[in-house]
Image 1 (cartoon, rainbow, N blue to C red):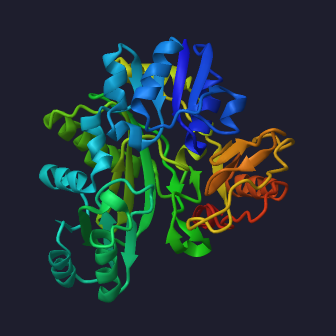
Image 2: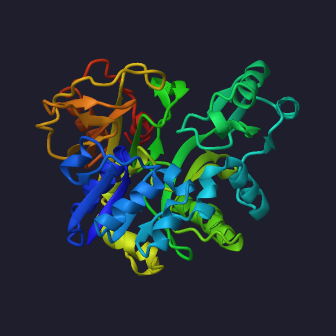
Length: 425
């Protein structure tokens, strides 16, 4: 079949890499793609948020199946438009994508259906938000309601810092319309965990868990990013915990979405904090995570295309999942200045002879014209990913490979998976 992937980041490269292994896929397309995806799929320079442009591409190229990577096109209703054309699409409807599109919607849903989450308040008025923050013990978490490319969450250590965050979001509009409302919530202590699950509206099938690293610098210092690396499995995510997450979080939210008339089909992602009272939801996403996908899909032994089809056809219960016991570690190489302003166009070298069991999933790359050189084209440039029989072995393998990859200004965290390494050693 002809399959189209929507998106152009490391997550989409990992999806393309996995789908290219499927005997069911005859032709792979991607919009807009990147320098790495172009080696696996035919790419077209159509932005992921151009719903009508993508619909036209689907018609013109007789696309049978579409996999939507990023959240923005889902919140814009891409799945609805494509379904209306009679095309199979992996990704939730616009109504279901509200689970990620509005943090206020997600928090209120969790509150109504008893899904564990932090104490919170939703505000469009800065004075009311400041008053609520004053009624809580710090630290405080201030979140823009809408989509902010993974950067709309501010952790504040003082009330003064909290007031500045509220003003920046509501009054200065640093996140644009994503900050027309905000959430003030209590700060939770514990280990973070990412659990993605396939969901076909009635069955929920969790994938193996991963742990993301959001802060830009080692030891969780510096501003939040879209994610600087991930690893899987994590020592904290044993069978008992995963069953608790399935029972207390994933199944209840899938049922709640059905009750609300927003049946969910796609990847249901729960960002969790493991507290003394058990797992608590920090956020829901409605698609594969980035960079968690780069650390999870290399461990999947199933044909991904068959799994995606089973979700669309509401027969996920027929799939028997198989996951490699190997450990996977993915480290992001970023442009100088990221997550702030950064340059593009730096030449990338050292990717031609990566060792066995190491892959470079491209996040922000392109081919320069006219010489065809691979150059940087984003803040997060590459996710170097290694698979090994042990976590220390996978860490050693991926960091050794990083030493041979070069571009001007490259920076990366040197402690990805360190928490798991300490626990497992």
